[in-house]
Image 1 (cartoon, one colour):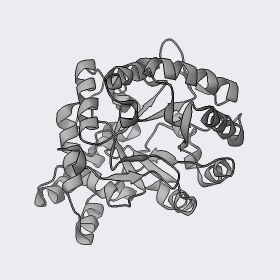
Image 2 (cartoon, rainbow, N blue to C red):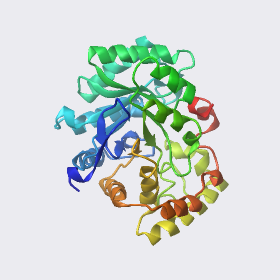
Image 3 (tube, rainbow, N blue to C red):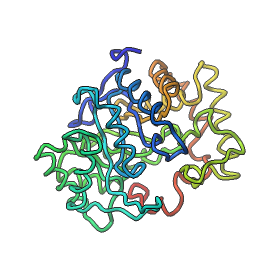
Length: 336
């Protein structure tokens, strides 16, 4: 697929121009089990060559490994050809344990310094707190990033997993390009309050979890087991009876997808794309063949009847288990 075949959209009213889909790099640093750096870099190159210029990472993914990996992958590319989205603020211990969130201005300036070094760039296109820090007003965090925008180290401000009130408060301080948040066929919580607010304020959505961490694909089957380091080993949707029930939805979705010569993953991506041009799916492909499958979803045109059939096959209200374990759900301002 040539670059011209992937259309470009503006991310919100004030954000950068990005490809209609983006690449999420988190899974390339062990969050879903082992990965191969060489194949990961090849996948990043394939995404960029296809016109998907938005690459999403976080300074805590693999304790810096992910930023270093992305930096290697883009080192031979013109800087203006890549839109780097970076999350910060999540704290980790040397054994990988989570240590909370730190969004203080002094901390985020420190985080950014190391991010620029690992990525090998002199600015970040979109910089965002990974989660809301309950000890730091969002106004302070956004104000500090705005100062970095003025200084040239950041181009745009983003948010992640925050609710409608926090979005309004943040947007009152400085322009917000996008909200990164989980949104998929079976995780549709943003539709009630959050999506109307982002649309009112002209803020884009970069949707992660579109494939529900592989659940909405053919890669997870009944009785699947996951390495202890794999996020899914601790995710309620992948446990025991929950997984059994959820795979029944996937099987129903597969039947619908087959009628239209789509894979399950493509049907889930095509559904997300159909929700509006203000929504840019971020797909966590770790291999080139998975990226090829992802790009294929862009050629699918769903009718209203197709969308209804997809939604009937996998209704969000029937999914078993929360999208995170209880302790992680408690950290989500978007769920309050």
